[in-house]
Each structure stands twice: as structure tokens, then as C-alpha cells.
Image (cartoon, rainbow, N blue to C red; front, side):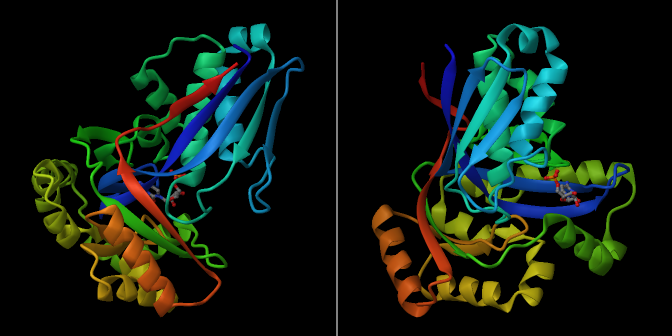
Amino acid sequence: MRSYTLIAPAKINLYLEILGDRPDGYHELAMVLQSINLTDKINLRSISTDTIRVHCEHPQVPMDKSNLAYRAAALMTAEFPAAFAQYGGVEITIQKQIPIAAGLAGGSTDAAAVLVGLDLLWKLGLTQSELQELAAQLGSDVPFCVAGGTAIATGRGDQLSPLPSLDNLYVVLGKYRSLTVSTPWAYQTYRQQFGSSYVTDTQSLESRARAVHSEAIVKAIIHEDGVEIGQRLHNDLERVVLPEYPQVLQLRQVFQDNGVLGAMMSGSGPTVFGLCESYAQAQQVQQQVRAAIPDPDLDLWLAQLCSTGIQVASSH
Ligand code: C5P
């Protein structure tokens, strides 16, 4: 096979709690991550030169070394020089549908697709945990994006415990096209404002991370109780992002006023999602939010929660 096309789903956070600081400068987190079927399509093609090339028609996606998909390919060439020498370079074409800098792990999922795709293209036969170890070198959300589904994530976000899948629920996502939030800014601001209440000793951090397994939202997921999940959505980063971006706060309120099971910002935002119990409800919510906010800068998507991470769509 000389070419693989992969489907890379976005993620939302159903739960995000910031526990404390880590010695590596990141934060200790307790999260519940969920894949949704809003996806990018990534094609990987072996090329005869020994270069990595990235193509993407989206004007805000860089095509140079700053693209996380490029860095994923560079990591693979460094880790597997014999395969790189044997198969040559790779051309990566990204068809972007997931909005960027949106709190939906769009860049992370593209990078995960490059790892999975090069493993196939170069016939490396890596296990899922080997792929996730490589993924952790690229970003905190990349290991989750490899496997996808529903999972508790602790540590930097890279320690994963799978949960039963939740494919029967839907979300309507809303994002102002002109609005992006920097993830480092959101975490740094949180540290400045709330760092004094961080858990500092290792034992307490470990027990707080373990406690997420018995959080009400995790029980609700295990019982597939959409109503309860909607009520238990939680994201600490809302405390810094919502006051700074009143439009996001208002969007969240409009979702709540239109009968969703729950509404929340995903990750560091600024995407807001409304959780819905059926496709029909999601369609209705999408229309109602559009009617309430006719601003053409607001993009809305309807997606289903899904139990898959990176999937192969085709190979040639
Ligand atoms: O790992 P990733 O590159 O996605 O993280 C982006 C930024 O988010 C980091 O540079 C850091 O500022 C912040 N972050 C954090 N703690 C985490 C994950 C991310 O502080 N566990």
C-alpha cells in the first residue's frame, strides 16, 4: 500500500478539573474525554524524496514544521529511521472540518492520524500503547485521539482509562469563526487566578486523580443516563474563559435556554456544546440557536458521540 486515508474525530470534554501543578510545567488534570463524529480526513502518501510535506487548504493551518501533523511525521522518521530510509518521505494532505484553536483537539487528532497512518504505511505493527507513548510526546490530547471513544484522562491528560461508549447521544456545537482561545493562555490565567488553591502534595494529588473514577458524571456514563450526564458537565477553564469572552458565555446561555440536557465549553474553548438526547432534538436545538443568534460569524455543527478514534477510510 502506498497511500492511506484516515478519519480523525474531534473530542469534547465532558469533565475537566484542574488539580494542581506538575514539575514539567503542565497541570495535573482529571478529565472525561469524548470523541464526536465531527472529523478531519487525512491522506498519507509515500513519496520518493526523503521529505515530509503537509498540504491543507484551510488558510489558518500552517503547512510548515509548526503543524503538529508535521511534527508527528518527524517523530516517526526519528524513531524509525530504517523504515524512513526504506519507504521514503511522506505527503500529508489534511481536509479540515474541525475548527482550529477551538477546544476540540483538531490538531491533536490530525497528529494521531499521522502516527496511525505511518505505522500502516511503514508496516511497523505498533501496538496501541506504543502508538500512545509516541503520541504523548506530541501533546496531552494526542494519546486519547489515537484510541478515541469515552475515557477518563488523568496526569497531563495522557493517562487513560476507557469508559463504556455513549454513541446514543448528540451534540450541537457552536463557535464564533473569528474567535480563538490560546490553550497556554487559558491555563496560565487559571494558575494566576486560582493557583493558591492547587493541591500540592503528591499523595493528595494521586487520591484526587483516583477520585474521578467515582465522580457522579462517571456513574452517569456507566448508567447511560443522558439527563444526569447533562447536569454533571464541568469545566474549570470556564472560570477564566467565560469572563474574558462574554460572547461565549451568552452562547452557552442560549443553548441552556433551548432545552438541552446540558451546555458547556469544551477544553479551553471557545467552542460551546449543547448535549442532546436524540438527533431530532439536536436538529431542533441547532435551528433555535441559529434563530436566537443570527450572527453569520457563528458556526454551528451537529455531531453524534462516537466510540472510535482514528479509523482507516481507504488504502491504495
Ligand atoms: O499538551 P498540549 O501541547 O496540548 O498543551 C498545550 C498547553 O496547554 C500547554 O503548553 C500548557 O500551557 C497547557 N496545558 C497544561 N496542562 C496540561 C495540558 C495542557 O498546563 N495537562
